[in-house]
Length: 328
Image (cartoon, rainbow, N blue to C red; front, side, top):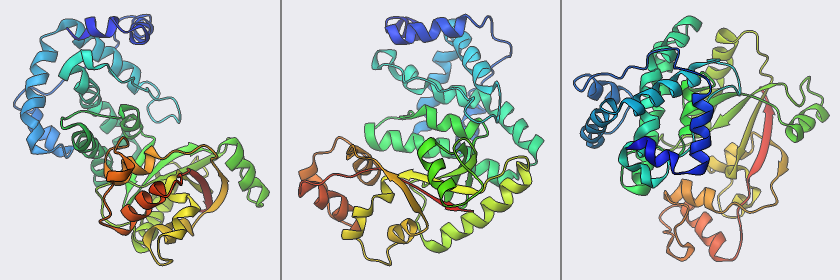
């Protein structure tokens, strides 16, 4: 049983107690029936090859009253404060002992929360195509899980929570997260003379995988869409600055990639606020090759980016996350 596996883990047992301390679920968490679930999963771009397994796991879930109560508690906690920055639910990863249902449980939480997410989008007048493409990132992350582990699931359910909580939107090639300037980046922005600083609203840029090249034209189109979108749907928030926290802003990439490459052109948009000093080699390996645990010596060299990441590591170098910004 799912709950038995969670209670056997001290960290998750405490998490369960915290959820239970909030009392009985205040809303119903309903899942589509076995006939309706496949169409909904396909709308969320979940690959066809996973549909049968996820329908079967739905049957196990609805047959377990305790698990369904947990689902309702999670949905209730998740939709609370819908749209408030930093107020979303950060679901923990479940242990392997929770089995396939534990591996996919968070996916069902997001599915059960869909009516509330869509109602929030309608209330703000968010276009259907933006809503659809934003929420479709669920399917992309099921594919990320499958690429790494060979099964459906979510490696980073806390990330998808941003999409389903009204904090992140897909606008063209890029994703934009409603966020706030951190201390160091905010100080850099203020020092440059902008009317913004630590704690002020900003848009955090993210670059999803499986979405084509990161061309300058595609990035520019996304920025045009973002300026219009947030001014229209979040008029009370002043988004004067865009930020990015990514290994793609490591200046060492310039040693390996041509000046007109998409990544270098992307870097040129930003002023670097600061660079991490602790290596984070697993991040670029995970993003470029699909698995952060791959041995360095075995990394393929099929593209310029693969050669850059792998050759740098094989030469004894490391990769670092950069924190950059530019005025919108």
